[in-house]
Length: 86
Image (cartoon, rainbow, N blue to C red; front, top):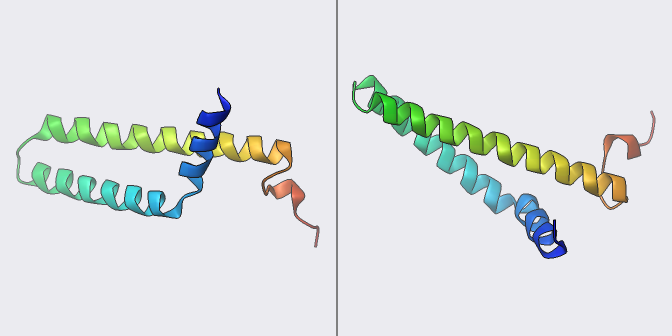
């Protein structure tokens, strides 16, 4: 993975506006799928769109986890092992 890609990925995952927009877009898409399936139309298209949304969510979650692990191993991020004991 190139350094430019890593910097771009870290900036995207750290951007709160991206996550707010992504969650809002997922909510709207899933509401639209739910309403269209309740009306009895586009059942298979709704399943396909739901599968896309869920798979993108899993991919973004895995990218965030790996980015947090990499930044924690480099000492630039915050991890649970760096917290002070009570």
